[in-house]
Length: 161
Image (tube, rainbow, N blue to C red):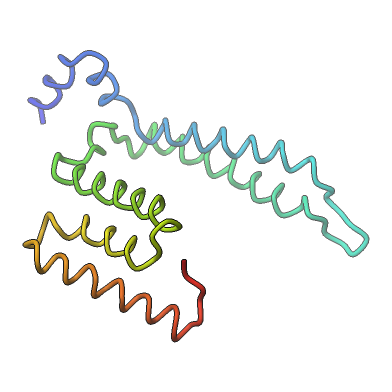
């Protein structure tokens, strides 16, 4: 633990970021988000002819969110302090997250152009190719995509591109 603290303190800006209280920063962001929605809820009428109006639920929900954010900020500063550096994934986990993110982006860009089966197969192939050999990864990606297509298209009658 002591080595990572010394290592983080030597790295300049990244060391400063890693030493920050992650709960405090998240709580402040959630508080700002809640205050914004609380302010926006006043644009909707609180009551209508039938009783509660469209502004009642967002006003109460964002008001309670402000209270929860303040409690969370207090807890993260006094009871459960955890640093940003403790939240970072390792190199392998970060590569897994990036793989999933970019395969989903590829799926979104390809979906309307080539259709669900090809785009889904590309998504699954990008996900599987790092952990399986080429042929099993290709077979799994096409097979799972076809099964999903059959379930949604035939069984549920969901229109797919």
